[in-house]
Image 1 (tube, rainbow, N blue to C red):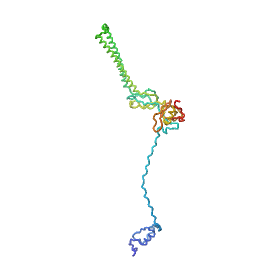
Image 2 (cartoon, rainbow, N blue to C red):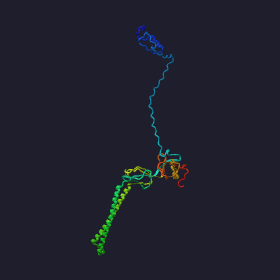
Image 3 (cartoon, rainbow, N blue to C red):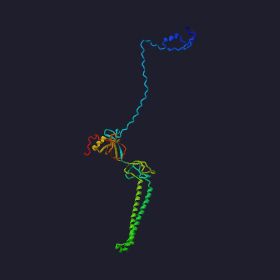
Image 4 (tube, rainbow, N blue to C red):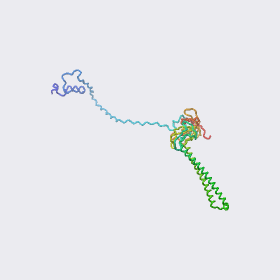
Length: 362
């Protein structure tokens, strides 16, 4: 077979080139289908062929099977984080109330207080107190406009005066009728002595009876008129706002010209701070010991003071706080300086844990 390399028209690679490729380890050599030109390529433009990796030496050992890789596990969704737990507030009387093993935290409160309301509708015309004032029981602290009631009072007082004159007139008329009756009885004395009567005597006696009834009626009118006056006076008194207790004005927010009635608070608050109450939550087992030993007093002090005072136990609550195992206890302490209520107090239990306290009655 004749080679066609000289003609340059054959599209097949020469056999020597194929053999060289086999010796180089099977590297793939890409050659154009057209034969190379007889003119050598300029330096630097000749194609550079990377040497092929050396072929692995032949071996008679049996082929080791390649391990089969397990398929990659499917991607799992990221776990959802549990919701953050909110902090649980301490129970009433819990650890927040405990200062030490024998001291608890309490709160001072007014021993009495009153929020004032007017007894009826009206317009405020005067407020005679201010915040922080000390008031006495029965003191007038505010008033409503009472001009209408005052006018009605004058009218009813005149009606009382008229009823009083009617009584005088009825008394005089009765006296006149009594005179006429005596005249008739004297004129017919012989007939009267025999127990007999006639028309003139009977008529005179009836007129006297009517006069007596008229006097009673006028007295009843007079009493009714006085009751009407008293009613109007009560309405006028109801226009006055009176302090029901002695204490200190803790709140006042009402002004002249504002409307007020029984359904709307006047925003006037009066508190009694002497004596003061101290409310404290004591563990139920300690309360039981206090009751069994008959303890009547505990020591208390203000949070900002080291001076202890004696307070009387005035009340053990009948209902403890569910789940907290504490019982509300109310103490009473003197407060001559009228220090404000609502402050934190320290209440001290007996240091011996009541183990050595004497039972009540001993």
